[in-house]
Amino acid sequence: MQRWKQRPEGSNWGDFGPDDQLGRLNLITEEQVLKGAREIRAGKTFCLSLPLDLPGGNVLNPRRHPPRLSPTTLKDTPYLNFPLKNVNPDALDVLSDDQVLLSMQYSTQWDALAHVGALFDADGDGKPELRYYNGFQAGVDVVGPADGDHTGCGCNSGGPSAALKLGVENLAQKGMQGRGVLVDLFRHYGPGRTLIGHAELMHVLATDHIEVEPGDMLVLRTGYAEAVVAMNGTPDPEVLHTYGAALDGTDEALLQWITDSGIAAICADNYAVEAYPAREKSGARAMLPLHHHCLFKLGLPLAELWYLKDLAEFLHANGRHRFMLTAPPLRLPHAIGSPVTPIATV
Image (cartoon, rainbow, N blue to C red; front, side):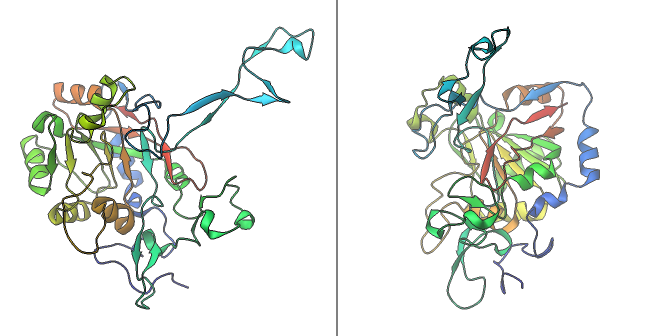
């Protein structure tokens, strides 16, 4: 049975099929991947990831902590600089093996479609339920500790949370490879806080002669990640909370452009892509309106805290804006986000 009787206004629920979990990533077709490959002219690559222990600390988000490395163990013996002769006197080998405790969205990351949902009356009974893209339901398709024992779900999540639908593994299986289009907001607006609505974005696209086509992944440089790097693991929240350009999620014209443009994803070097908190309004509303529009309504994944300085400088020097982008997340079933090491090839 269809999971919903009515869909949110302006959404594309059902357009890619009743059980679709890819959303706008469906627009990254084989031809779109070829378009990305045709942008490779110099054979140069750029790593677009921060070191995954940045920003540093947890002042930007008290829920998320830096990665913590430790050795693996066997019978309480840590396997780091472990001489194998301890178990075989003839062995010359020395073994080191580690593990990590990692907040999936601490540093350079993808948001899976299970990251943000909304209260919405999908079944038409007059009572809003907790729903995600394409009507997938909290407590059924995205489960957590409050949903009781789900160890029998076959999800092998190993813990009390699991996005049984809309998990980040869907992005990994898709590949997240295609054509990236860089829009350098930092070059136009500098480090001060600038809200980027439709008018501001169109100004940059027109000034820089940038064309954005369906299936492209939009990549936004604001300089934020560069400021994070300069802080060397001790981020200053007073500076960062008002640093650089950020999309204005309350600008309806901007949201409509995202819908009409056909872009498949938005990747930014700042903390949330959009300005948070959003411009003040009143009444029942999404506190993260751009996340609401992209993740919940369109199934359009968002990426944050990418490092774009070196790529931006190369593209500017060569009069270019497009490149081949390869950015698969970890293929970790049922995760809600993932670190990523994006690579731009030019």
